[in-house]
Each structure stands twice: as C-alpha cells, then as structure tokens.
Length: 539
Image (cartoon, rainbow, N blue to C red; front, side):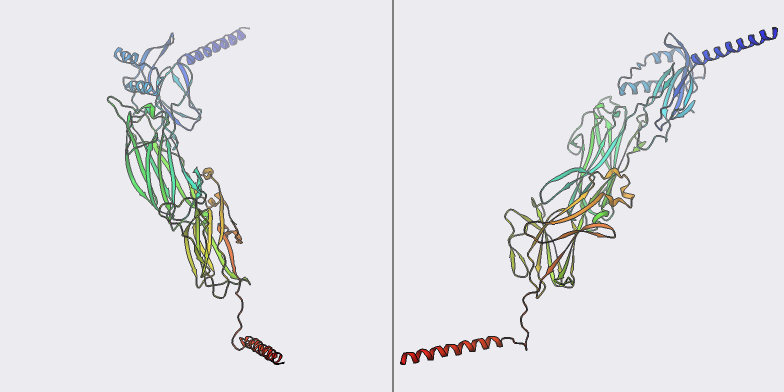
C-alpha cells in the first residue's frame, strides 16, 4: 500500500511538472510559421520581454539587437520605440516604421532562425524583424517588404509583396481587305513589311515602398529574320517619356544594346522627385510602361511553318528594402512568332510535262496602297500582246516577276495572306496565252502562341501554324493546294497548263497547193459562165 502511494505521488508530481512546463512554453514562446510560397525567411530577434495587459514589458536586448544581449533596454530606446506609430495602413507608413525599427537591429548578424514552406520557429515573446533571405527569392517574384512583428501570439508570416508583370504582343493585318487583329502572339506578313510589336510592363502595386525602381526591357529578334527596327516609342501610363512630364517621379532611359535587327536592351529608372520625397509615389502602382516598335521582316526570314520567333523578358527591381535598385527579378520569357509563305507555280504543257519559256508576274491586292509602294496602272499586258483591265477601284501592287527561260517552277517567296493576281506576261512560243488568274491565300495560326513559353527552343514550335490554303476568285480557273516541304507547311502551289496553238502545215506537205487548186477551179468556172452567157446573148 505504501508502495502504491509512492507511485501515485510520483505520477502527480510528474503531471504538475509537465503542466508547469507547458504553461511556461505557452507564455514564454510563440510559434512563427513560414507560408508555403517557396520563399526562405530569416528571423532577427531585436527585443525579448513579457506580456502584461496586452503590452510587451520588461524589454531586454535580443540576439540581433544593437545593444548588449539580455541587458535591459534603456529608457532612451524605449522612448524611441514609443514614438513609432506602427499604424501600417499604407506602404509609406510601413516603410517609416521599418526605418525606425531597423536602427535597433544588426542585419549583418546571423539570424536566430531560417524557415521556409510551413516550417516553424519557437520564438520567445518579443520584437522581431523578418525578411527574405538574399538570393532565395524566385526569379519572377519580389522580396517581401521587411516585416516588423511583436510576437506575443502564434503567427504565420504574411508577405507584404507584389509583382511586376510583362507581355509581348504583335498586330496582324490583312492588306487586301484592311482588317486587323491586334495584340496577338502570332501573325503573318510579306517580306519587306514592317511588323508592329508591343511590349508592356505593369508596375508593382507596392511601388511606394521603393526608393528607386528600374525596368529593363530585353527584346530579342531571331537572327537573320529581320532587317531593321524603327518607330520605337516609350510611354509611361500613356505619356511619351521623350516629351511628357511626370508628377512625383522622374524617368531616365539607358540603352545598353541599341535597337538593331537582333533586338535591344533598354532600362528605365524611376526616381522620386519633389522636396523631401524619398519614396516613389503610390500613383505609379499598377501603371503600364510600354515600348512600341516595328521590325521589318527581312529577306532571310524563314518560310512557312518554322516561322520567325521573337522573345522578350523584363528585369525589374524586386527588393523594396534596398537603398538602391541593384537587386532584380525576371519575368518569364514571352514569345511571339511571325509567318510568311511561298507561292509555287508549276508550268506544264497539256501532257503534264514541264514547260520552259514563260514569265510570271505576281500582284497583291491592297485596300489602301501603303507608303513606299506603287499601284499598277491599267491595262496590264499578258501573253505577249494581250491586255488585262484592272477592275475600277482595285489596287494591285507588284510583288515580283520571275522569268522562266530555263525553268518551269516559279517560286514567289515571302508572301502574306490576302488576295493576289497572277499574270503570265510571256507565254512560251507555240502555246496559247493564259488569262490572268485571281485568287486568295488564307492561313490559320494560333493567336495565343504563348501557351508554349519555350517556343524559341522547341523544335516542334511549328504547331502554331496549322494550315495555309488558296482559292480562286472571280472568273479564274486556277486550282491551289497547301504545299509542304520536309513535312512542314510552306504555303500554296498551283499548276498552270498551256495548250498548244493551231498547227500550221510544214514545207513539203500539201502546203499552199490546195489554195492554188481551188483558185484555178474558181477561175475556170468563171470562164465557163462567161462563155455561156455570150453564146446565149448571140442567139
């Protein structure tokens, strides 16, 4: 019985000790938990203390404090702490509070803990500064604004951050009917056309936390596909930076790589402006920064399904805690693609055999003749000496002329979708002329090609162009089909057949003899009639 009493007493004592330890842990330590967002957080201990009536009292300098570890906080420092508003209703107020609190912490010291993705730290009650660990923030995200937290209860880190976004688009124009589709990821153009591109960056919502902020536009045009860049315009919130003025900030442009046939690298730096202003204005939050330009599709452009790829990435300031803007993130690569096609004309005789000696001219129909191009005048000569009258109000512009003295295949490379006129300006000797043929070219390509962000590096990027077709228009008899080469679509092809002319007799045959015989018969007949009439008159 005595033995049992001892066991019971020991058990009760253990329960009391356990309950006391739990109570001490609950009062003396609280849990800081990292969110599951891929960020790694460093925790710096500034002060420790105890909670009394909702306040932190008996403050002592913590592990990372600017002060003697575990020593009582001086009255001077407590006065400074009481002056901190901790309102936190705006980013600017947050920054002011952080700047005041940062004076008490040595951020060059080792943090008391480093946690990420759901990990926890048992923190003694006190003041803490929490920040992203340098070099661990995902490349397309921003650093968390420093978090100053009074830990007197369990907390989960709630990042005060935002993000900068970007996109690249281009416009697609049908020259023949004048219609256009804007802000797409794919388009088709003629070689020599100026392709309109649009780059856009959207400024982070927490821009007012930044003392300095930059955006670097890195645009890359596929090598060999383009011949010129022009008409480059930069705007902030729709205002041209070369002519406009801004309130609360200034913008400076730095060109690292000048616009060339391979792209450009342009940095815009935003600085606060105004007396006593140290942070960028909240009015900039969410504003768009755009770069519009044209790139001329060059003679080296890839024909058909492979396309001509352009890529764009944006680098941007991503650490609002920095005194400068040296740290940066990078948005995901954005890709657009331009297609151009080929018309193949096969020349044959009635038996389907290749036929040399023709010359073809290809004209494109324009709703409005663009600057730098000239509309053909009517009539157009074809078949050596025949004339084709251009319909009233129709604008045809010469694409090119190909002579077939020694060829039967005519390849018109670098054409767009639209309406065309094919003219056989010279007909092979001994064959009948072919009337001019009108037809249209239509292409189907994915308008949102960025569903494959790695288009530039993807050997299968040709999926974006799904078909190219041709169809006769007006009274034409031409037949067109989709053309492929090495299993990739290149454009359309057609066969133009020349029929032989009427066959004249050769020397040594009946030749003109038949005409002499018929003439003689007619002369003899006329003489007989004349003699007969005279005899009848004599009687």
